Length: 239
Image (cartoon, rainbow, N blue to C red; front, top):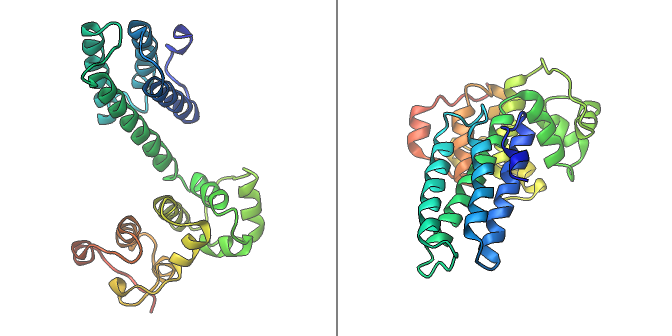
């Protein structure tokens, strides 16, 4: 099985699938009984090396961190080949490995949304419980196009790519703390931090100029904005 995974993944989806499988293997080890630590390491090493050698991660800090953890894991297993782990050193390393792998998967998802086509598909499917017309208005497109996006049918987007990409990035940031309908309401909530304007108004005015401010609000939660970002960023509102 390990030899079949030695080749680096060729696509982003395959890379994400490999990382997800590796998380499952490591979490399984954390939950299951010890023993056979050397065999476990051989399997995990093959998977980690394949991911780290992929073009997307070859020179990335997260991949380097994963490789360092792999070396530490080897040292711990050589000192405790039966996997008894009396000081929980093995468990600690595996838990840190899971954290790094999950960060890599989040990074992959975020990078994909940098492309308007991927952002449109992401928003349409993530807000699947929201009426088609409301999603279309948010993206600045038609209801028919949103229906196509939900089917996975997304051609090259030339209209408002900055808006679509930014909406995708904002929804990506908000999805972990809000329901789909809550995300939609966020775009129409007046916020004191931006002079009582709503995120949608800033989107309508100039998505590129207001990206920094809107991303800061989304990352900080509901209407929470770092004052330094407001001071440094250019806030553009509709006339």
